[in-house]
Image 1: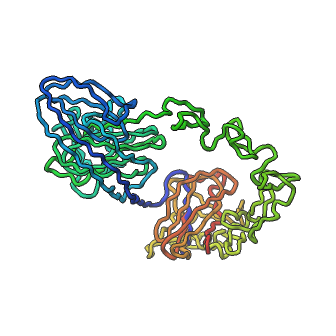
Image 2 (image 1 turned 60 degrees about the vertical axis):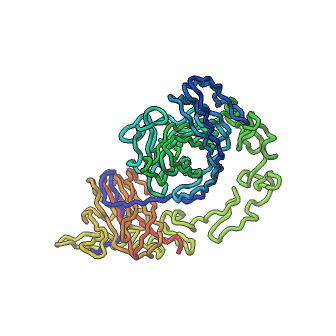
Length: 588
């Protein structure tokens, strides 16, 4: 018998025939934002032996809750150096220099660097904050306030620093090196190697970050360019590159806003053009702290939020604190949500009885015909309960609108029609036509026409039927439509294919398909249109009621076959029965 193309495979959870594929994606280009970098003079004072110096806040700055003011005792030479840190935050870290050293004053020129567009990153809602505060260079965020758990790179495992190399990292692991040559803090730092001009990302491991404004400081030395961003499932914009070419540790500041709590946050270090002359780039002592905010000590109810400007609780969006915060036809309920007032309406669906129409000008129910001003398509009917157009029974807009003896939607006419109608492209989808076929000998089998497709060395290839012809039987006990259904008997695992012969389709078209199934066992279906369509899972069934399964089918060639798989069938419900297999063009 010639193969006829509908493959549906029913199997009880195991077995089957199939194959799969996969795809990949690319990042989205964005334009970065340029942030100004302040000029800071690095002042150095040489002091003999031991001098006690009281730390102070730089002129013009205001000490905040995070600012640390300490008295430094400096042995030999005390070196003070101004460093720009973002967001008007004064942070202090004392440095003791073991030997007397005279260091010449150094002026760092202001530099404005244009942000670099990164094709794979996508801008998100968080905003990078311009760095506008001058703070002494040897100051830092207190460890207790640091949200970066492993910012000192002291712990390593499997060649990578603990707490680093998150999901957004794409710098080769060979470019992340444990550095014990000259750490800024502790005994280890992290060396980053990327000699190419295309940036690569090195990130923290993801961690939960509360909403707020954050100021970060980290130290870098070597040769290369480095900048920062954040990853929260999407990429933020990047800060400007800092060009580094020095064996001395240099602090870099970075500040940003987290508008909402972030369940998985990664801080990004984007590096490029590193050079071997100074050992590429080295980073160490990474610290980020959340700045204190007015609402940190304010507790609000579930339906409120804290207003930072006034440090007070106000009604949150979508909630109400009283009737005055709702529309005139609404009341504020106990759940602090606006609800319809008694006798009011949002639409006709809220009205009934003698006043079935909603007057939208006053939001009150009035007398009248709900469908009086409703215009529907010829194949639709106005439903008075809500004055909306609905598909008229027996008519259709889609395949799902048709059931029973008329399971096919003729989309052009909007009529539900019989399975044999031209709108159904699956030949003999209702299993009404059966003939006797002989296979390799004298035995003949009664089989449905256009089914039991066999592809024995055919070209082009399509999947061949595997189930024995003796297990494909005409069924009349309970049909979905017409006089016959198809019974599949396969109590074993794995499932064996039952395939249609190839039938004609339009290349590139997507077809809406459905079929009816009942009985006891497991089943699934698949399509082959010059290549395998998506795989489907086995579904268990144990019912005398017909159930509908829907799917789509498409391909680049002018023919398809359908495949049905059945397995673990049981005689208590006559195994598995299949009927009314339909595929239509939803947009002819």
